[in-house]
Length: 310
Image (cartoon, rainbow, N blue to C red):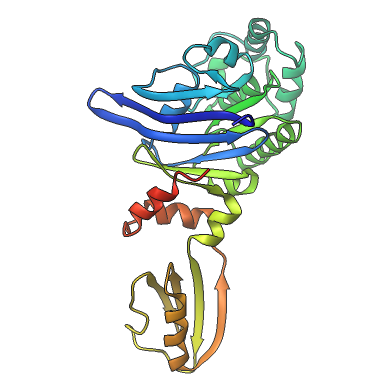
């Protein structure tokens, strides 16, 4: 696609006999903020490292800006800002010296002083040596380094890890700002509320395979519904026992149901017990994420088939 900034086809990485990722088909469109979700070991970092040619794929292809990630990596990286999940910094350098060095190496569009603006915004003392920094301040160094080149694409791996809530909020504001200026953002995080707040679409990766790719609002409204039904008298405990329906809790004379299918059947049964109130509870991205990684695997194959939609 002409508007795809990131595009992978059948992307597969094996570490010896162990699978990193397999058959990942992914498209990230120009100008969007794309959230890449999955627990540790699911394949998020492996995918990012292939995109940046840090590791080579076992099969499949990856392209950024229409360029082959393995053949044209130098040209790609000139236009990409990257924050890795595990930072490796020159600990004996002062933060300011580090930024000046990075600026000189990159020749970036922001000029040699833009990093000062970012550091001031994050309240980072750039006169101190990096080895003196806490984990949170080292993370700030990584954030500044990723943003200071004013890249066309930002790849952020857990960008707010180790920083306090106020800094988390600032980083999210920075993501929104650069996105409004035209930057595409590929965003990996475990903090699901912030993903839901800034991302246009999300991809969920499970055990190395992409199991869902969808717009955030569609993902939170189409997967399942939660209904709280109140009755004149409590219905029997097995009243709503059927495929696609899970009773989550009972409080007094109300029942909270998670409904994946058979909504008509649920309502038909509910009318038998004199409904006094119906309330629909909102479903968050975290609820969806836990549904994919929770104990219930009855819909695994259906979810996998849906994962090819982009």
